[in-house]
Length: 244
Image (cartoon, rainbow, N blue to C red):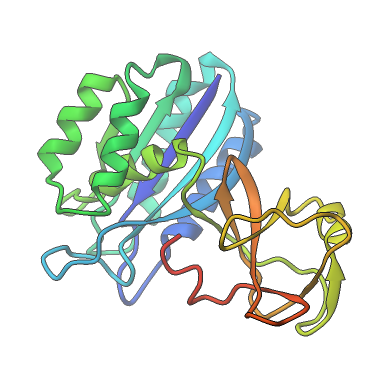
């Protein structure tokens, strides 16, 4: 079965990182041979002065293929990881959704998008999770991380939201590389412009610093841009990727 695992609010200003906590859960799943995990993505939620967050109010999500019998022990282990490894003062939340058991995908996706536009309450998150039949639990502090954990799962299900964790290591910054070589790295499934143009295999790209991929059309995508009149595409900067 395919599952989505979302976590949020496991860190504090002084300690921890939600991405690292998610990676620890992935290690547990794979070391115990419960299943195979796929790309970890960061999902941007609403930035608002009335929302308590450490830096960017983002949640994390990854998918995994597991046997049905592994679902409950996986949830228990992930919960234990949050309780053990989350930073003091954090408000960690966990969401685990089995795709085949989910009652209403569209409602979960709509919730994910809603967290980008308005303040959501913990009660709203629990009410929706109950209706949809997904696991949602809090593991410390005020537990408001359940809001973002559920949102991360909904946004990942869109196949069009999220920035993959980790940087690409292709060539040195400034090097020019063709799309064929990028795709052969097995780290990128598509090279696309910010305007939606998909580059062909013979086109060339100048590499910048801190190469990141995003989830678009269900594919791990390297975004590029080209100023008017320029001949060579360039990989996007952090400024281009802020809303992913």
